[in-house]
Image 1 (cartoon, rainbow, N blue to C red):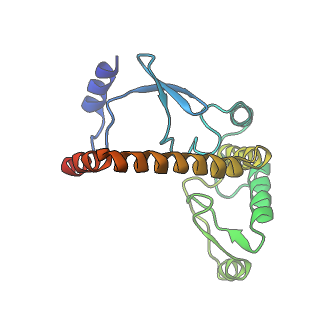
Image 2: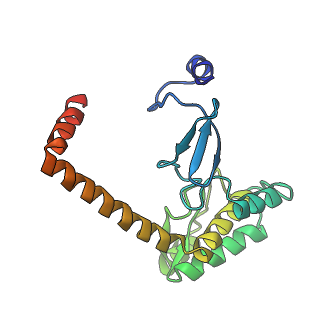
Length: 190
């Protein structure tokens, strides 16, 4: 039951985050299910599933294959997955180099000149995720899936459709006076 898990969560974890009283058990695509079997549409999936959805078969296969091969090495070593991901990032953004390290892959990218200067001055990459072929395999698979399925284009199309529907709903609510009542109700909650 959700309540049982939430009681354990309250007992054993720091409660310093926004909470939703649902305990999620599994996901598939844009859907998630709680421990009681109720289905939800995931409009807030976070970093791991934003691009491909939950449990995407191709991404799951890439992750499983890498987990069965090599998960972690350490910063001083090179793995094929790190090289392939760096190559793919260079194909997508050829004028920059990835400092990567423990930061999200897109967090620190600099021009090649800056990267060469840092390297010449002895700059070392130190991170908690360096030498992680597992994350690199997942990142590379996500980039490949995104391109192959035109997920960015789909996001644009679905986003435009959703926006148009919400604008139509807001206009209908405004013309009936419902919008102002709804807005004032939400304003009083904050």
